[in-house]
Amino acid sequence: MKNYTIAVIGLGYVGLSMAVLLAQNNTVYAVDVVQEKIDMLNNRISPLKDHEIEEYLRTRKLNLTATFDSQAAYAKADYVVIAVPTNYDSTLNHFDTSIVESVVSDVIACNPRATIVIKSTVPVGFTKSLCNRHGHHRIIFNPEFLREGRALYDNLYPTRIVVGFDGENQELRVAAEQFAGMLSECALKAPVDVLFMGSTEAEAVKLFANTYLALRVSFFNELDTYAEMRGLDARQIIQGVCSDPRIGNYYNNPSFGYGGYCLPKDTKQLLANYRDVPENLIRAVIDANSTRKDFIANQILQKAGYSALCDAEKIVVGIYKLAMKTDSDNFRHSSIQGVMRRIQQKGVSIIIYEPALVNGSCFMDCDVVNDFDEFVDRSAVIVANRSDSKLETVASKVYSRDLFRRD
Image 1 (cartoon, helix red, strand yellow):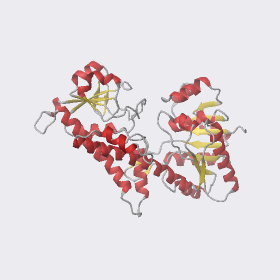
Image 2 (image 1 turned 135 degrees about the vertical axis):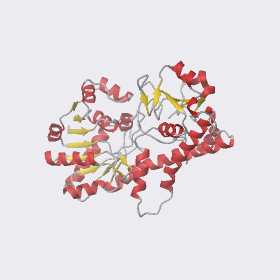
Image 3 (image 1 turned 120 degrees about the horizontal axis):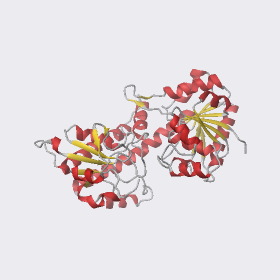
């Protein structure tokens, strides 16, 4: 088993989990621009909430060094793995790939022999276009299929490894196979399905996979909306539907809509890639998510006693935690924020119970109240995207569509 030198750029959940995974058998330099993350990782403390990463950093012998010096990391690397943000720009209808492009330019200038591996989610056709623009073809695309809070676990037990590269360049094929081999060797699952394909096809796999998950979330949310409006037991209906093995009992717990970092932006990017291609379903998924938030906001307002004639400012809606998922402290783009904006538009006051925020601070112009008793006393209704045993004593005040206490 050869020991490769690998630079991983970006210490979000994708980059951090990849760095920890590969550092089991290789020399890894993890690069980030946030000094606190670098210091924590070098002290074997995870900068992110992930139990598996915490355990591996504490108990495993990893050849892993975090650094601010990207140039030194590039110069030593056989492989440079890019895992930086690509936020969706709604004005351009396109991912903002500027950070990826900047890293690629720097790597080519510093170490043109290194194989560049893009893990950041990008538009369909991006990798091939990048290769052509730079006249440099040592670039492969390796999509990630990770759950927030379980990123290392999903790398250790991957559903599949997809590696996309273009051309008949034998040297690039060998590099792609070597990288896939590294991932397989570091995984605990054996054997791992490895799929080699064109980089554009691999980019499409990522966007279509996430859009299907968004579709599934939207389907069960619309089922739940129907049940709630008709006074039916949504739990019974979902259990009956999902007993069919062709449908399966997963991704079916109702929520306030899909959110987080990936699904909202990936669905929008896929829709943008459909330019000049007939479609109905992709747009419908995005519209359904917005409709769900409208419905949830209206249900909350109704439970809180809101009407067009009331004094809206005197009604207080309490938001119990902002995170999208159970056991997560990340609330970037969580669906509850879209619901909050809709409630605010009615002039209703909102307070937030969120231990990850400082008591007395503000978030989205809403006061953070982390004294639980005060939070309960002030709230006409308590909104929880995901249930918590702490709310059992005030269940009459709680509005939640979490039917299965998971996800």
